[in-house]
Length: 454
Image 1: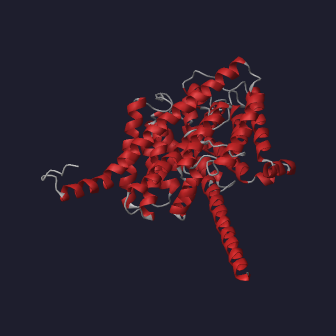
Image 2 (image 1 turned 90 degrees about the horizontal axis):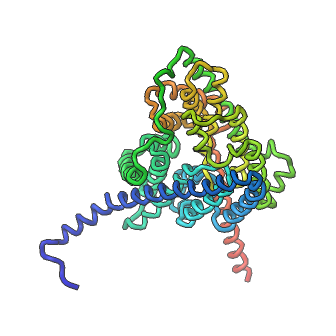
Image 3 (image 1 turned 90 degrees about the vertical axis):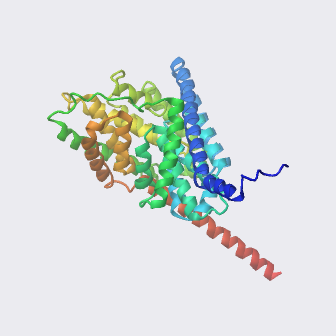
């Protein structure tokens, strides 16, 4: 090997290494998050397009395909990818709050990421009511967490900042909502925000967003909403009614997910605990039946329906939000990897369409925007994140105050029914991890006692 040029001194090499560790690794991670987010979105669109084509040609096929895919997804998740179930946000919160290194190795591994993407793709092929935005949060956290290996000394504080930045960038790239990514990191993932973490989060969001924009172009998730005539004398009443209605609906959804033993029959509970694969097939059958009754409108994430009704190109039944909610619960209970952000926005759009029967002289797009932010805020109980996401998705800056008020009312009403959903679910991961640790300790003690006895 030829010697280095004299001008390329050791000091220069040290500066290059320092710059790589300070900036280069973050930029690399951000680019990866943006690329994977775009590819994942494309994959889910292709998968649902395949399902939709099949379903429209033969409306009865989901009655056979969806249960089979439900069983397959549950089997694969429990057998090969435990920790990939659900939206992924509870896993990220659980990792951030306690024992980042150890918890991250089990919940934020590259294997989990592969399972999350692969099984959710299979799930959307079956028409399950799942979104990609929550999983993208976990995928972003996985990518950034595993880049800790490139640092010579990866401390718990560094790992925490990487996870936080990756998760926030994942949400930002999924919705093309950079402000929402920052707010999400502050309000949902962590209740405080270190000054050193802020620069990391913003840097990663910028680069991940730039990659997504470069591949997708500059766009708003639901397009630009026209609100020239939306501000009417009934706006204050519409905000109040929408906030209460969506708060009750979102709170009930959280209650249903967190208290299954209180409302599901004993036989169903036994089936879920003793035969989870059969339970997955049963939930798939329920999703398929609801979808057939709704004429196919409840299948998938609901993005197409929400965008269509928001633009005035699609009509939704007044029963749509209730049927979609039932399909969403049936998709989430068996533990199929998939998010609830996009389906929640779709349900909110359905409630906005329903409220238009009451406020018939008020702009339909405005009511839909208010209901979307209300239902999302009720489900997540993160009102700031909800209104920033919706505001950026519809370019609705003229409705900021109304969106904020609706989100606040809905989140407060939701708390009468259930605690914050993601926090409650993340607590279950912490309890399960602690129980596993205790079992390991007991096993080690027994081994030691046996060896001493010999």
